[in-house]
Image 1 (cartoon, rainbow, N blue to C red):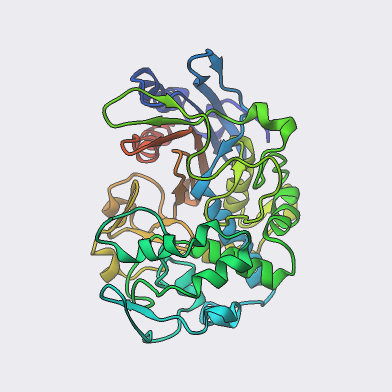
Image 2: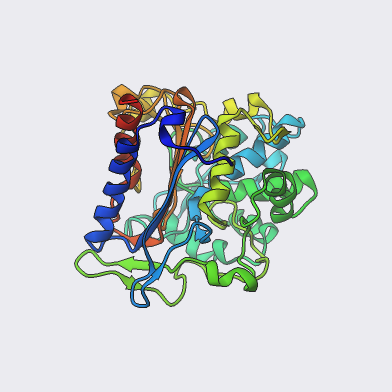
Length: 402
């Protein structure tokens, strides 16, 4: 991708300096070790910055081609994979999930501590694509009150050796709520991964590699980091609420594999560079194409980046990490969609689509301003700074002053 001065694409260097300064301030405060940030506008790189260090103790700087654990920034890519199959007529939003995963035909809903009842209707693909099917995640959230998360862990769903076994284990636990009634952060995207494998006849990793990564030129994006690239894997840090950054010897969420894992997690399993993810973001801005290659239809991109949540649900103002859902701030397929930025209180363009990851990575694409931003850090922390909202607010000034 061509690199140009900010002014050539209608941005101000001073405005981008302010974005850099905001990230650097968190590094100087000892909250973040280092970051790689990238700004795209009109299809060209207006700025890429490496700030801070990869390894604080060793004094090793970050590089542009560092590979990051993008965790939940896998989810939007999974939505694109799903829309490729939708383009081929292989699924419809109104389909029951069990049409594609028959193992899930007899799901029931948790009632009280251990009771179960039939769902009002079988969960649909539309609900699966928007965290409304009734699934949970199996994460230690809300304990000891949240019984459903404990049931997921007891079934070892996220420890399954492969996607088929994951689905089989999922079939043994109840839904957390009636389908369609609530938004609940869940392993819905991992279920999508199983559907991608079934519908395509390929393993999930092979499908993403051949249908997305190779076609987009995302050479460093995969579900593992091979040994010859391991020196480029960014150091992972943890920050307790009341202490300094601690470098982690291993990834506590999932071991970092150096070969294809048996369970390719469509919700959180990918590794990527900022440059690779920028190519994906630009494809979304282009309506499904990059460098003359069509990856997914323009209609598929629009469907992914269209809010699916009713206002009544957004009025409940639920939260997932840094994502604070509210009127004007909705959810499409596997990512946030701003339907009314002014009402949401963030100065991005209408239709902006974004998501983030557990280790602090973040991105957004803003079709109205033909702009994309990718931020990569590696920080597991309960008190991580809201860099997505901070940089979105400052980027608006870089655009507005141009």
